[in-house]
Image 1 (cartoon, rainbow, N blue to C red):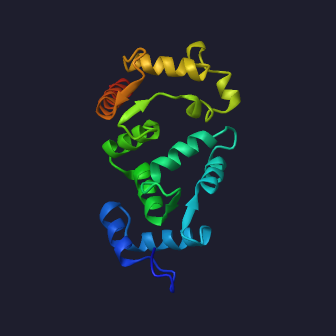
Image 2 (tube, rainbow, N blue to C red):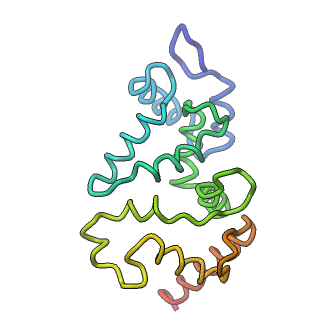
Length: 184
């Protein structure tokens, strides 16, 4: 990755990221410098990623969810995130197009890469701080109840999986419906 002698980002990666994100060359160079300070070897491992994620969710247990997120960003499946994967992830989650965000959200639960969503709310449920879990309605106060409610919303019953296209269509319908309810 990059020019190892100077510690600079390679022109190839810089050009690729400029073309595939909203970031300018100056922004990417600044991000790269910060990334290299945090990760001198140019990679973030799964354990470090989980620690970083835990800082954003101090009152919950994000470890399992962080693993799903990490897996979805580790596009070359080498067990680390390099600078390119990191920036693409940052772009996608902060400013990417809706359809790309939905693809990413789906990938969190496509655990065996067969383009099917396997509902497992345990990881998401642990992201909810314990004091907030106590305030959840009776039909959502356990991971299984939340999963059952979501699956009922998707109309899947006991089918156990959802395709990426169906997930995106339903998510967009939910988004549009919610928008109209709040702005209509």
